[in-house]
Length: 186
Image 1 (tube, rainbow, N blue to C red):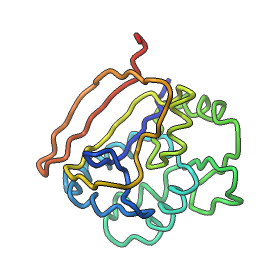
Image 2: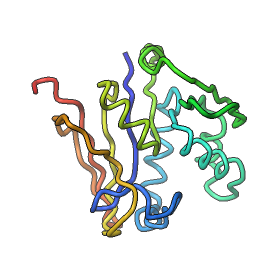
Image 3: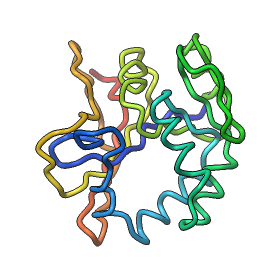
């Protein structure tokens, strides 16, 4: 069975974007050859990308017009994508399927694949998936910047989620990638 993996960049103080939507300039602090190679490696091992509506719209707008990062753009535009949304009426980005309900059933189908699926961004969708216990692994690149405000990656939750460390990777530019799995021995 494959896994559903949350992959995101987050500031040291816990934000995945600044005070405005798509305020992601802090990504430039850690983007480089190492993170690009890791991204390509993850995309090669990927069955599909999973998005909420807001992240889907932003990613589609960016990756369909990008001129640099040709290899990453090729993967992003060709890989199967699923967008979970109750309000979106169509999903035009190449190879995208719109899902309006039955999150648990759709994730169960994804996990039948040989390859893993990745959630990019999508903090609201991730919060829902976390509450349902559907995320198998968390991969977070901690960016050595304190923003002081923005949108937190992890939403307030009444239950603790205990995790088990799977590994770490320190990037030359100061970023740290943390890999955690749900700790079933809670």
